[in-house]
Structures are given as structure tokens and as C-alpha cells.
Length: 347
Image (cartoon, rainbow, N blue to C red):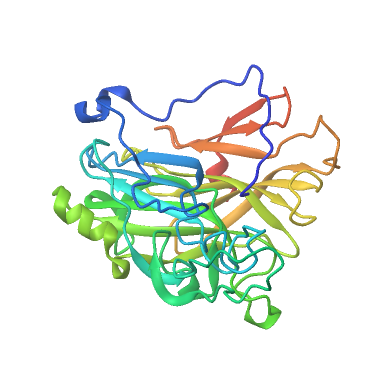
């Protein structure tokens, strides 16, 4: 979610997702700004909850994401005493580097944008006359093809790389497929126009990178038509999907090579992540993210507000070479549990 309660974790094993020997030398140099598309004034220059992943097939290529207000209205648009998120405008920013992290790019796509809502400063007591009217085909620095498909990118990004499929067969020789998961809501408040049942789903954006040439990589990532429409993992009912992680089985020796896994908490009581029963859910795709099966791996029915011993609320995923799905369950306090086993067979 855009705001989040940080949990104290005691005794939780750390999982290092990067193999340091594979990090290019350039990435070990000076710090570089990632959110280079950031614009002033506030809140267009606000980002939080970042994520990053290295393409194991092209070690020069990194993709990052964050909750990013780059496309939101300025705070002085409309009522100068408020600074709201602009309804319908996405907030999942994307950046990439083709030189090992030495410099970064934030592509500009088109979509539902409030960058045009710059506003004016009105004297106290004056009724605002500059209400924000977003541009339906304006510039965006967030994930593409969301408003085009009746949904909104709502942040909490998680990224992973896997082999690209051709005719149903996965191979690194086909190129790399970027999987970019994030929270996703319906664009319209009308039930008849909803793209899924529930409050918040997990949307998975995808794009293939088929070249080792940095210039071609940048073009492929920056071209809207190269991206696929987000596939949705709906919570069902009044559920609120949250705290997701994504991973693709990238070991060619695995019988599950190319499978993609999303683990998330499905808060079945609604949008308040600290006050509802949660079902820790693992979804799997065997077709490059087009469709998803899922299984509930942990149910918590005792997560009432104020219950500091609330069990599982989120998870992390990774696929070892043995093709077993490794899930780390994160607790809200000092309890941690870990399971490892052939979850793939249950999906």
C-alpha cells in the first residue's frame, strides 16, 4: 500500500537476491540517481518503496520501480490546503539502466496523467477555480497500458526476470522477459465496468528484451507497443491483495523452468491491511504471465486491529535450481517462519 506500517523483524534469515560476482564494475562506482524523471514541486518529486532486479541474461541491464508521484497533480491544483493522490492516475514508476547502474532512464509513455494540473496559489478563503482535469492521453512515467485497460497502477512494485517464451517454449536464447508486479485497482467506480472483483488486485506487466545491445534494450523498454497489457490476479469478493513479491524460475535445469510465481497477502475483509483476516496466497503462471493458478498456503483469521501477534502478512519468493518454491513468511512482530517445498505441484 502507499502507506505502510514497518514491522520489527527479529531473527529473520536474510536472503540476498544478487550474486555480487555478477554485478558489473560500473555498478560499484559512484551513486547515481535512479528516479531521473522526478519533477518539482511536491508531490511530483516523491518516491518510496523502491525495488530493483538485474537481468541474469544481460548483466548490464537493471530495472527499478517505486511508488512514484511523477504523474500526480501539483498540491496547489484545486484546494490549496490538500495534496491528494489524483483519482485514476497511476503511481508505479519504472526506471532502467543499460550500463550496470551507472546512469538511469525513466521512459515516458502515454496514459491518464495529471502532469497538466499545475494549479495556482489562491488567497485564503477564495474558492478554487483550478480543479484538476487529467489528460487521458498525457505523458506518464509509470507503467503503461493500465488506464487503457480499465485499471490503475497503485504502487508496491516487485520485479523479476525470466526466460522469454516462444510458442510455449522457454529459453534464454529467446531473450529475457521482465515481470513487473504491483497493486492494481479498477479505474472506474462503477461495478459494471470493473475489470476484477475486489478492492485491489495484483497486476503483472511484462515486456521482452531480446537484444544484448544497450541501445536496442533501451528502445524495447521505452516503446509502449512492446509492452503487454497487465495480467490480473484478482483477490475475489471484497478482498484487498497486498505485499506481493514475484519470481521466475530461471534455472534451465529445472522441470519448472520459466514458471512465474507471485506471493501476496489477500486481506479478505477489505482494504485495511492491519485489521482483516489474511490468506497468504501463491499464484503460478506456466505461460509467461498470461494466466494464473493459485493456492492458499497460509490462513490467518486472527488479525484484528491491535493484535500485535498477528501471524503471516507477507512473503518473499525464490526458485532454487531444484525447482522448489522457497517462501519466507514475514510477521508483523518478532515471529518468523520459513517453508521450503514443492509448492509447484500444488498449483
